[in-house]
Length: 545
Ligand code: G1P
Ligand code: ZN
Image 1 (tube, helix red, strand yellow):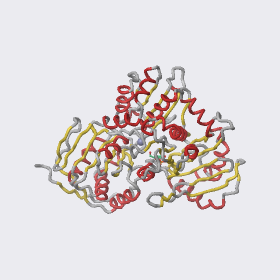
Image 2: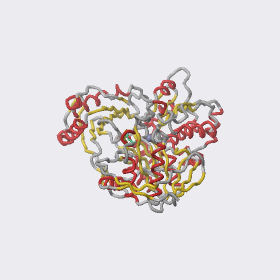
Image 3: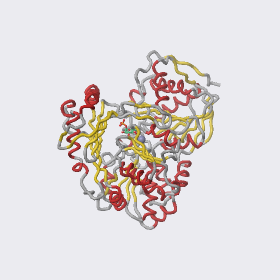
Image 4: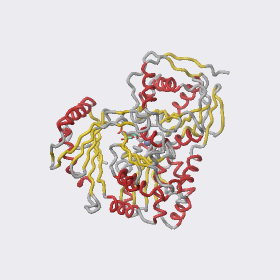
């Protein structure tokens, strides 16, 4: 037997590698430095004490997944893990991994992905630990991992080679069982339980057309199985459906900027009835109707208002949770339904307790994340299927549904402005400077708008009472406008300032304006109050979504 655990000592611990909103993300070059992946993996193991446990392992298929997975398996064996359940060829979308952890009562899981960040040798890689409920590790766990990473001096790895992951079945590595499973089957069955596949199949058979852009990322096989094989969409409805290690050289982020091809197709002469895309690891979604883009905050609101039309939610929803920078559109739906609405910090991990406690059924973020209590991650294909279920039952198009929604609830015009590649010092200075002036701002005006409130957003978890502070600044203006400012926690190059802008218009107002135009006052006022030009030297954002 050649599976004796050996211990390799590293000289330098990993300092200050704090996992951001979703695990640790770094350039491939950093992750592949000798000992780097090993040190972070061992820190995770030290924090979770995996001996005798069952873990799920999978990733989005990006570059460095394969060698990283082999290393993690060899380390799991040396750390006395009892069983690892791995997706075939190492593939699992993030929501499918979450489902597998729950379904198999695993103790947790490791997901290898940098989500929507570009892949390839010059791209990004990431590692994230999910807990037994299938969701991202909460702060107590990530803090423990960080603490372990600070003073680690050894990692454990078996000498034996990791088994091949190309066939389903069981193998052993030392005393550990490596169980290779079909990455799609369990997830697809869950979707069949939640949604009325017969109704969707009939709508498609009756001539409804769709295009799903998998962006050369992990949802290709999932979408092909579900949309084409099970729901009967014609072959070719799923485009860019073969996952590649560098996502075809693209940026697998489903928004009008990076999924431009799909966006343009849905606005062109041959537009199908429905378009959608998902990101690198399958947890984000973009929804586009024929000639109309659905902003993620609106999508959450529409899904909340219509979820009862799908079998999985026929009993109604218990509550809706949204991250702080997401527009208030879903709050209006919750109010009308008489259910709770929650405003959490950015990052899916903050929804976990609400979902576990049955207080929220649907959750969403402005950054194209939508999901429900069926798993503990956001879920791109789930959102697509809920939309399709709603369209099938209502027998109306996306544009019509959106229009009727605004006529009922009013419209929250919304946009996010990103200032990228900033020097971290200046970005931090802007935020701390703004925070130091918060109490003096209410009553001041700019661009004809008066500030009525300002807040450094903090959140007390209603379930476990934990307090999370410093989650971004909220500026509230007269007349239903709001702006939020925070620094990104997922970037790997410099700092990114995100400025989120919204303006509510009631059902009697003009519901058909261009969003940037409807937001022009709040854009100008916010930029002045925050001193964007003065402190960052920037006159315009790099990305508007
Ligand atoms: C971004 C999004 C956030 C999301 C996260 C992970 O984080 O803004 O909503 O939860 O990616 O997908 P950020 O870079 O803003 O910290
Ligand atoms: Zn993602």
